[in-house]
Each structure stands twice: as C-alpha cells, then as structure tokens.
Length: 188
Image 1 (cartoon, rainbow, N blue to C red):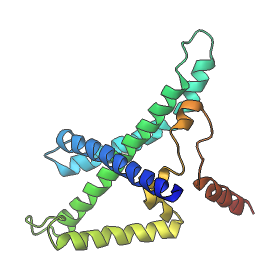
Image 2: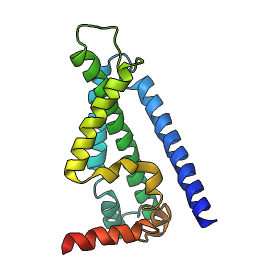
Image 3: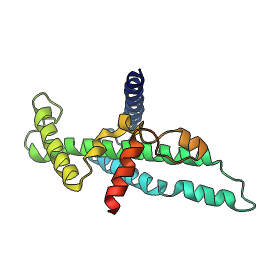
C-alpha cells in the first residue's frame, strides 16, 4: 500500500511539475522573441542564469533583513517560496534555451544548406535527439552528475514544501539516507 501511494505521489508530482513547465514554456514561446529563435535562445539562457544567480542566498538575505530593527520582516515562508519559484522559472528558462539551442544548432549548422529541415521533423528528431542525448550522457557521466536527469518526480523524495513553511531541513524521506551516504563517502 505504501509503495502504491509513493508511486502515485511521484507520478502525480511529475504530472504537476510537467504542467507547470509546459505552462511557463508556452508563455515564453509566445512572448520571448517568438519570431527569432536565436534571440529566444539567448534571452532564455541569459534570464535563466541571471535568475539562478539572483536566487543564491535569497532566503539568507531575507532572514538577515527580517532580523534588523526597524525593517518590517519578510515572512520566511514568502522568502523561501520566492527562492524556489525563482529557481523553478530559471530552470525552465535554461532548459528552454538549451532545447531551442539544440534545434537551432541542428537546423542552422548541421543542415545549413536546407532551410526546410527542422530538428523536429520525422526522422530528424531521432538524429537530433541522439546527438543531444549523447552529448548530455557523456557530460553527465563524466562529471558524476547523471542522477540530475531524474528532476521533478525524484525531487518529491528530496525537497518537500513543508520545509518552506516550517523552516525545517529540506532533505527528508527516502532520499535522506542516500544524501547522508553521499556526504559520508565523500568525506572518507
């Protein structure tokens, strides 16, 4: 029963996360240089990196501000939600910039002489997909970061929203033992 509940939770969270990403992605498709894919790639990557940089230490800065006398404190839950939302949108932007970047590379570099060929055309999607997947596998396996491909559903075991509200540690549940083992093995 617990396994079924966990599976249902992971699938449900994955579907909700995909829906969040889809909504953000489609809004960006319509409003972030929709007629110029190279500008859209650059803007997506630039805004995504800027958002990730800006979110670094956001909660700590908010906690610091709230402890000062004379400044109306920002509720910690609001600061934490803002940081998570900023990172989430930044991830969408970086992923979108990367995805569109691969399409641009495939279409404009590998098939520069044929304006009719699209990376998403039947047959070409396979080649374009194999190329990006091969580069990603090589990079992630080489750096030891392959588990990063697990993204949204796996995060339900690692980062819980209750930690945003309560200020408790962010790592709980089944992934905690894995996180503990990684840090223990890294220090020995």
